[in-house]
Amino acid sequence: MSESSLDAGTSPADDLADAEHRRRPLFAAADQLRFAGGGTAAPYAVAAEIGEHRHGERSRAQALGHLTRLAAREQPSIALAGLREALGQGLDDRSRSTLLAMVAAIAARTGHPDADALLRDAGTAHAAAGDNSSARHLALARAARSLSHGDLPGADAVLAALDPDAWVARPEATSIRAERILVHLGLGRHQDARSATAADETASPDILMSGRLTALDGLRMVAVGELPEAGALAVTTLGSGSTDLGAEVRALLVAVIAEVHYRRGDHDAARAVLRGCLRERRWPDSTMWTPAFCVAVRDPALREPARLLDRVVADLHRSVRSLLPVPQFGPRLVRAAMAVGDARAARRVTELVELVATRTPVPLWHALAAQTRGLRDRDPDALRSAVDGLRTTAARPALADALLDLANTPRLRPTEAWDAAHEAAALYARIGAPGDQATADRRCVELAATPRHRPPVDGAPRTGIGALTPAEERVAEVLAAGATKKEAAGTLFVSFHTVDTQLRSIYHKLGIHNRMQLVRAWDRYKARIG
Image: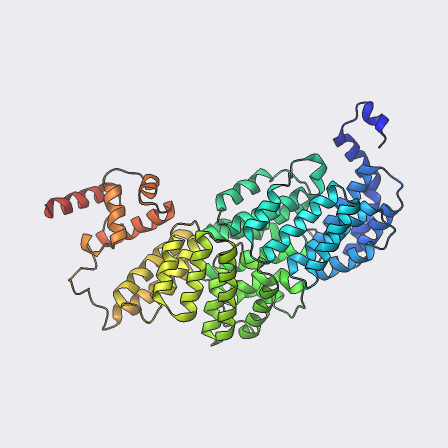
């Protein structure tokens, strides 16, 4: 669009709409190529049009944006091949620098061995002739590299400099938001991730882009224990019949659905969802399915679980990106490795989780590192540390899993193991995971039946005030004094969900059902002890 048209009063949005109208037949043809299996030819066709230099700057930007969407819809191998072919289309230096940055971003996400070299090439091209578009893609590539190495603070710093709300950033806006949401999830900032998703619900009419945010929101729900909501969201989105969701989005939605089925105890339904994705896939395309594989390894009934575990561990050593959004994935892999006697895999996953914890020193990853170490070494002290750390986070499924891991530790006193299993069962019930709750309940029954399961030496009973743990006593005292659960959490420096879970355990041990009964029971206890 000429400068004179801008002087005449046309807005940037009007110019962009006009450019999109002129490009629509080309984009439709490129999409048809992709649907027909010509994944590498579609970017080639769009790049050839850019290389003709027949339209203005905004048309170029629109075409580059469509290239971004084409690449996002494909498997990594096809996207890389298509973009590399597109680089040979007589592009101007600025467009070439943008495509180089796109290639570097895909390489970084999948842990490609040439990722660092590609990033350097993209950086050199941008420094020589790049523009704002290549700058944004280069930043996304650098953030992707940080995420693949478990450096969440580094990725956060890079993405903070990008403004997805700027109109010139429209083609990359959802990619920027999606990467930010992934960072929020990895850092345990689940409320921030939820807010970021909600803010963009109606921002993009593009099915692929909105699907990416929907899939990430499903992972958030799985991470915090909103299981019924996660399952409904993923089933609705995947069942929409759209052929335009993109391969990665579909893979993430499958992982969400299968996770919810397993948590609920619907193992046959989970296997039916997963079996179609367990076929042999070569790297880098296998990286898209790593979250689904992290779900599948919990099920020994699936075909060749040990081989599946090897594939997951190998891909994670290239890029830990798939471990970041759902806290329970790392410990689950160690648990699966120990179950099949693969000490090497257990050690490798533990090292990866500890690496992320070193580069991302937040309570969530410190706790996960302790949990994986405790599972590998059967160390109750490490598992206790994991439970304490996870209590300060919103990762309720991970906390419930850690409690059950603690209850299953052979070196733990049966009374302490029973308390941990009982709390795990209550928490599983809270998040809508009846399948896992049944597992925890069975562990409680096993521990109650063992001859060594006796009250402690001091004669503490299993019911009544004397049965409360020190942490539960503190919660009971504060709540009986009139504090709300939120106020109690602030007073005791624990999460709201910790207070909620402990209150349920208190009610169970005291045989009561509401706050008024708690006040009366605590008053009687205080009067008795003087």
